[in-house]
Length: 78
Image (cartoon, rainbow, N blue to C red):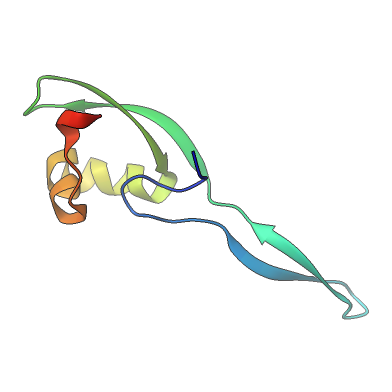
């Protein structure tokens, strides 16, 4: 499985690490991903997702069903 958020689609970003002398070396900025068990009211069960911390905050605000509908994910298949 790729290091990618299942709801928001966030993934790693290529960047430069810049030293004091301004030498630039490539680095990879990873997403802060967490395995999270989220209660899904409509399905009356737990759903285990790999989410970014930003997605976890958004789920707390909007709800899991609303976010899955926006993204187009079928929670019955998870």
